[in-house]
Length: 166
Image 1 (cartoon, rainbow, N blue to C red):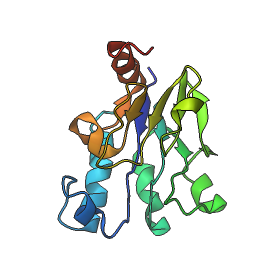
Image 2 (image 1 turned 90 degrees about the vertical axis):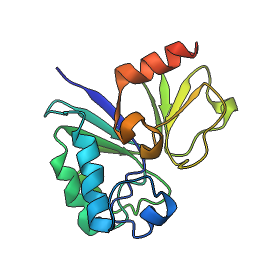
Image 3 (image 1 turned 180 degrees about the vertical axis):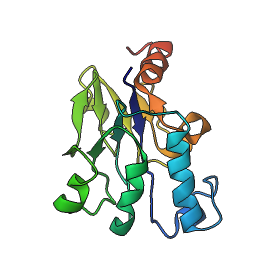
């Protein structure tokens, strides 16, 4: 069975991420990067998994190969820190987007303006510390996910249904 997963703000290769987000795992950058991959693997993805990584995936493009440990297909929504180089990204992602509407949600890195939601919800990242106080938004930045692990499409749907915004 295939699984659809969402996560944002992996920050692989980001030299100061542990200073900005001390709740993440690892004592140094290499340990952090390995921790991120382990967190992703902890949900037991398989070759039929579809990953939606909603931006800020990798600060050091020489470390993009770490994503190869994640089985399945990967799609990227570009974040404000992604250094887009077509050849490097297309080796690891089957498609690259600036933002799109899918699964009755807007998939973006930065939350979109409430007036642009148009009866949809917004799955986003970007906000590491703050949360939007609006039930139409779901922040999938790794720091805000339960257990700091990717979230499934089923969990997304349950989340919005629980809040009455399906």
